Length: 255
Image (cartoon, rainbow, N blue to C red; front, side, top):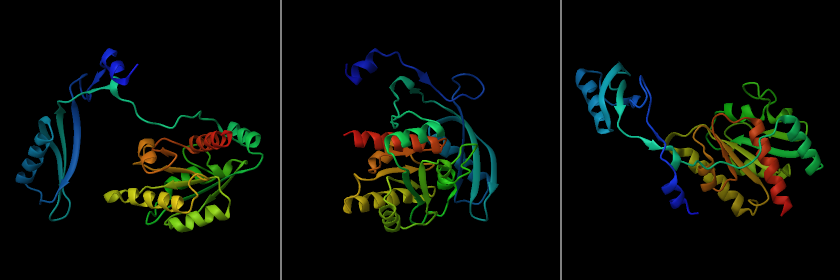
């Protein structure tokens, strides 16, 4: 049965933002304008919210951000709704295992340690993401890959050139490269991630290495578009990444 026919026969599941009562569409919006704080600036913010499609917008907070900028918080009612029956988010298909199960699967399948090299690449200096996945203590009660006795985890830290990351992966005979991208201003993360993928392709290493990326603006769909095997956003931990890498390794070697 085609997707179009499925959609035609599935009952719509409409959803709108919720504020005080179900379906009221109430939302909160914030932004900065390059204007000194004034009544005119507040009205400009309100009119912008109207043009964005909010009904009855009101400025509930404003403050000066220096002499030439002002920050606004507005409430309003969103007139739009979405049909949840038509939404399907791409995600990597794998079973999330706990640490003991990951270790057991590696020992059974690989008969050696799984080698993972990770880094924040290029100008990205924020190590919180890569450390949460790689470091021994991990994050939020979820131990990092360094605590997995069947994984050799090499954390290269921040601001690592893509060429250096690839060279280290070759030196360590890595099975997987894990990249964290936290800095996303002006979509710099897209340039950085594309550059790494291109280098691996040019070196003929792409099929040999499992390539994973994580970060606050990363989705699995975006990762696949950029040439990666999987993408992990907020709320993912070392066990998610490790489970995917082991399953992907098994899938490739089963071929």
